[in-house]
Length: 491
Ligand code: FAD
Ligand code: NAP
Image (cartoon, rainbow, N blue to C red):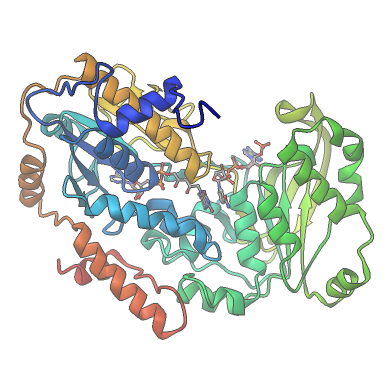
């Protein structure tokens, strides 16, 4: 009891205290005479969390966020599933950050094209690259470019209103869809494909996507993974959403679950819960009520394990379209998370008219002056410091690769800020000479005919989207083209 009122200062909590107070270890502010100007490239979670932490940590720092699109929030707007509105609440915190006096948002600025990274380095004391992972991993199999085959990135972008995916026009006239990969993105897509339209109608899914899904003839979705049930990348909440999805029933193969029950005892807790859920769904006879529900369901979903894509098969009648996929049957070498899929030599063909490759996103290089590891598709960095590039930092998926939820991105952005503050304190990052910041970039953008969208202009777009949504019972109806966004922003 004696100690109940005392605060225990671990090294992390001490650092967090310093971060929030803007004070060095000695208890005295030790800032350089001119206020540091930092710019961030990318207005997704990493960009906003980096800005938020920096602004809290140093009362003298100003932060400018450059975003390629006229609208902010990255994958929170264009990735997170429309039926997961609670995840999008982070937007409220990002909005508070953007409204701070020391933070400015410049939407509609494509770094690498409208401004080079070198120009940003000349204008600011530090540049943080947080532009995410906008490419997708390819399967690298013959037939990947046939029509009817889509990347998850494009499919998700289409239903979430990403302007570059507006014309995707996926053909949902087939009965069976195959999704390759078993991560949460694959599960999001399966759910959107099979959800009752009345559920989707109440979300911010775009109206054109809703209309295509309303006409969809897809009745069966198989989610295919190269390894086994104890290696699935998706998480329990998302698998449970599939299990409980109205008007659907599961279709699993008992053979995929051989030996899985015996392995349960050695699994770490979250994976154990997930595996138990899959085992129950696949192997147990359902109770009467669940049996009845499954009997009535007109749509089917299934997880398929130990299968890798080998070839996308063309339709013999229409050779530019897909009619199926050839899968290699695998076995596992090793165990646990590290187990590797190895080929058995056996093959299996599955007929389907829609194939979505959901095997991961990947970052791209946007400027040749920035070091880029094209093998790992990340910017090589040490705790967010880009290697061999003083004054350049990175955060978010560009820093770590395309894994992790928004909370993971928060933590890794926090770590990058910690590195930058250490460099400011130690003088490794020189902030002694004044820098022009947005004064010089605004002049460059004006010369180049680029019209940045401010945060208050985004708020006009936001209000209009919310207004359009309310008229049809949705939280928002997104604008689908950059032109319309710019028009509404008054550009
Ligand atoms: P991004 O969110 O991609 O942001 C990058 C930003 O940079 C974008 O706004 C982009 O337009 C901008 N940009 C790109 N190039 C340039 C350029 N040249 N110049 C200027 N700006 C540029 N996590 C959860 O916690 N819950 C979920 O439900 C969830 N669902 C997800 C669904 C999908 C489909 C995906 C792919 C991910 C999901 N995640 C979810 C993970 C989460 O979205 C990521 O952790 C997070 O968005 C990564 O943040 P980021 O800022 O690094 O990248
Ligand atoms: P992911 O979780 O990394 O899953 C990728 C999947 O693709 C895995 O099943 C992987 O199998 C498979 N794969 C990779 N390369 C392959 C290949 N060459 N051939 C066959 N299969 C291959 O990626 P994601 O689904 O894109 O998700 C990205 C991140 O966003 C994740 O951290 C995810 O949790 C997060 N996210 C979260 C939510 C949510 O919280 N609701 C929603 C969406 C996304 P292996 O395991 O065998 O490599």
